[in-house]
Image (cartoon, rainbow, N blue to C red):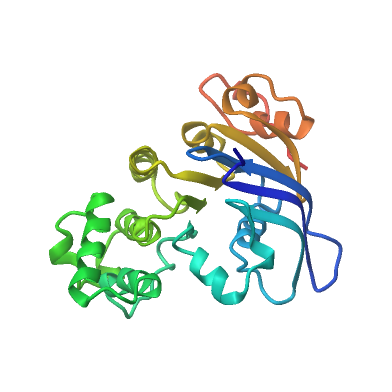
Length: 270
């Protein structure tokens, strides 16, 4: 049985310059969560955007990206549009700015439904939207349907983005730094929500983060990126117990824990 997502020898360059991502090989099985970690600029988000073919026209992409055995690079624009949202969905960074401020949250989620199910009536679309809001534990979704993004807290906006991502029942969810700009209490709530949705729907997940503590809670396996390359991959427990690559070791040493000697400086990543 083939993996749900396979990335083979991925290379990404911009404006013909030296590749920003090179030789990336990743796999995600059905129901598995892969954590993709590394410092800012390591190529994590570019890799995820390549999966959905959302990179700018200046980007050159080489290699294979297979979803359920289909090469996404070979699909037409219309075929790829059908994959986005229905086969693969994405939770983008920055919940405070990712939503359209002049559209109600109900209409924004409904737009995602209509893009893939034009045959549904307005009432059926609204029913699906309310169901997805209920699944992310949005209080009183019927009353909040016609509210605007500014009327919600940061954590609630993130729940709205997650509702938008799951409304078409995708098989793979890409979460790109989904807890950015949220306080630790709200972060914990969002992580519990993602874990619950993953178990309930059998979702596979690509979880992108620079926060190792978050990855430890969400991933089955971890891939570590440095300078556009994957330098180490292993089950999450092994990565944290016995990291093999010097960069992974420095990455772990740069994150303080309760046992960190505060009289000594943290490890440097450079």
